[in-house]
Length: 94
Image (cartoon, rainbow, N blue to C red; front, side, top):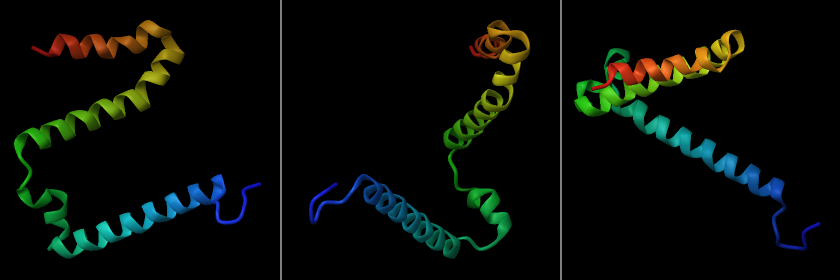
C-alpha cells in the first residue's frame, strides 16, 4: 500500500486514460471547427500530399488484410497459407 501522497498503479493508469480522453476530445473539437462539411472531412480538404495519402492507404490495406485474413488463413491452411500474403507483396514490389 502506498504511503501518503504517492499514487497507486491504478490511479496512475486512470489518470493517464483520463488525460488521453480529454486530449482526444480537445483535438476533435478543434478539428471539427476547421472542417466545413462532411465531404471535406472525407477527402481531408484535398490537402494531403501524395506520399501521405499513399502510405495511409497501403497501411490500411495491409493492416486489414493481416488482422482479418492472416489469422484465418493460418488456422485453415497452416503457416504457409498465411505467409502467401508476404510473398505476394514481395512479388508486386519493384
